[in-house]
Each structure stands twice: as C-alpha cells, then as structure tokens.
Image (cartoon, helix red, strand yellow):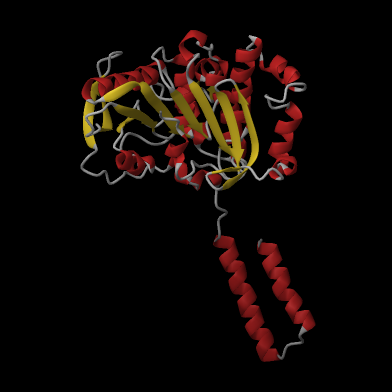
Length: 362
C-alpha cells in the first residue's frame, strides 16, 4: 500500500509540470507520506475481535438472575445467568452456550427474545474462556453443562420434552460436543458457525494469524506442539454417535458462506460434521472418507466437489436460482437427512437475528 501511494503521487508530477514552489511543497508531502508509512503497522488478524466472540458483559434485566451451581464432577462452583418462566404452564428451556473467549456474563442477543416469550433460560459458564486445560469441551465442560440443565429443571417450570441447546462459534463447538456426549434427553441442538475439529482449526488459525491457535496450545499443548490425540478426543467430529439417546433429537447446523474468509471458522467444519453424522445415521459408518465417497451419489449429503466449490467461490450459483432464504438471507446450500440438517447462508461468522424462531416448539 505504501508503494502504491507514493507512485501515485509521483505520477502526478509527470502529468502536471510543477513550478519550483509547487515542487518544494510536493517534496514535503512525499517526505511526510514516507515518514507516516514507516510508522504504520499492518493490522494483525490477532488483533481482530469478531462480534460473535466478543467478551463484553451484558446488561441483564431483572428477570435474569445470577446463580451458583455446584459441580457434580469436582465440587467447584459454576456461575450462570438464569431465568425461570412466570407461566403456570411448563415452558421450553433454552440452554445458551457462550462463545470461545466468553463466559456466563457475555452478552446474548437471544436473551431478549426468550424474555419476550416468557421461556426458561440458562447461560452457564462451563469453565469460561477456552485457553486452559479444564475448558475447551473437556469432560468438566460437558459435566458443567449437564449440571446447568439439571439446575434449571429443579428450579423452573420446564417442559422436559422441550430442552433446546443453542451455541455460536465456540458455543457451537460445545453444542456439537453435547450432541455427541450428553446422555440426557434433549429436543434440539442448534449450532451456529461451529468448530468441529480442533486440530484442523489450530492449523487454520495459525495460517490466518488468529490467536485462537495460542488458546488451543495453552489448553492442550506443550513444547510448541499440540497434543493431536487430545485434540481429536475433544473434537465432536471424532466422537462416537450416541444413537439411542439421539433418535428423537434434532441437530441443526448453520454456517455463513464467508466465514473463514471474513471470520474465523471455515464452513468445512459445519459440512464435515453434518456429513459425518448424517452419513452415520444413514449408512452406519463414521469413516468420513467413505461418507464422502457415498456422497457422490447421494444428494442428501454434501460431495467433496461441492465443499471445495463453496470454499473457493463463496457462492453457489446453482442453488441461488431457487430463491431460498433463511431469516431474510439467501441460502447457498441446504441439506437434510432424517433429523439432521445443514444450511449455508449468505453471511459471515454470526448467528442471525431471530434465530430463536427457528427452534420448533410445539
């Protein structure tokens, strides 16, 4: 950028001959530009804070109160924001999971929509920022989320058949992990722009100069290397599908087409997890390579060519002609198989306003 600015200024002198006074002024301007450019520092991706990983605390209305939940796993106390319904009739429970760098007090745009519907709500801490071993979808994290659900069931008028888990980004990672790990009956799992493979995301973050790579290293790394086996153990993509516990549960995955370009999680995380789970339900195999081979002749799955095209083009011309939309945004890809669905929408690293309306509550 420096060279382009200077060459542009120099070109003006060749097109418009200058007097000695004007030439002196031009030299001063060019010198000033050189000095300014020498102090200018490029904006590092590490300095970028994505809106959906902001750690800003929310101004919670009085109907949301801070509660303390003892851990059944290690006895520590977990904070959460909790809202019980005021209705005499049992109401749904929304379990809203904070993002990668956030915690229980983090702003949650869904909270106002929950309050307007007078539903039950809990926003647990589950070990907070994912930069330490006890966080980042550890066994303690999953136990904390289960403890939070148990607390809400014991302290609010919850319809036990209407428990819905929702998470964005790092919360999407936790949502996918809950789908694969929690033994509790859950009606729906709703993951927005989720991470599904921690080892892959480590290298993607390194390549994009995002400090999320440093967080992963702090949680499961040593001597400058991440523990690949531990990364896989914690990653939802490689966990065993609890078929008996999930037969009646819906899994909905949403990803912005530009994420990974304008954002930090490539859509491959969503596509791979969708294929893995949908393929296993349909073909009884968890081998992703085999599932991608099957996808070549199965339109309910996403083929490798389709995935590569989405990553490269960030648009799907073949699908846009259908005029399909999600909450007012064009849809680039929609897939479903059984109770598992995937939508790639026109967007970035985000959850769309009105996301609560996509949860089926009968």
